[in-house]
Image (cartoon, rainbow, N blue to C red; front, side, top):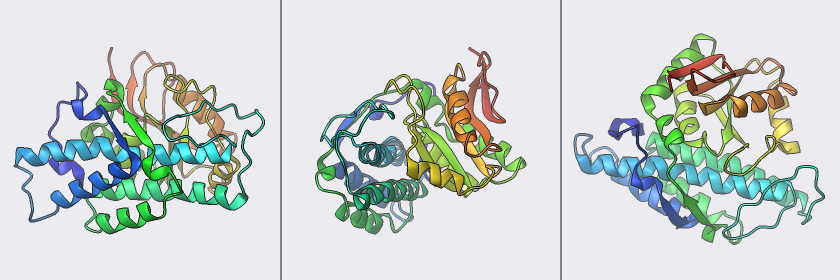
Length: 287
């Protein structure tokens, strides 16, 4: 796992978190780094491996981010643009009508992007092949989508493996979930690592109240079907990386529980002043 090489200052986000790259280049660079960290090629005691692992840790979430944006645009009839993220009004008429097979492919692409990013965190020996196959199958234009990442101290603090392990240990005491559903975009980094520790499926719903001005979780008909497939929700974990006021996780939980009422909640960090108390917490943060 990638944490074998992660020796970082978890209070201050690294410069590596600031980058702008085409999507295809992100995938290719991730493949190069995974290969460089393969057994026999590098020692975890070598500081050069620490820099590479840190770059991969902040790079891999982009694999999911872009696919999620693509899926949201297709599911809700928004234009596809090489650089822009669009605000989503789930009640507005569709601007573009996509064929059903295109909607299915976009949803499947998101699932495959999550699997690929998880393989990166596992340092999967077959990642290079998986990445090449994924890249070949990208929809037209997505390879060149320009992804921009910016430093975020809250996301970074909650991405510390020790904190995520603490959350995973807490969750497992209550029973292993079948699936973890995170609030994207902030929870992607922590979520990829968490799902590996829990050995469960992973999904993300776009719900970014501060970066994207989302008023509610963006839930498509296909998202709803995926959630309802887990019955009463007792095997679902709804999570966020950092529960400061608790608003994001509270609203996300309420939305998912309309479909799966017994779903559980978790946060890597819960601020002591938070008005929402998840069922499971990795670390309580005293402001």
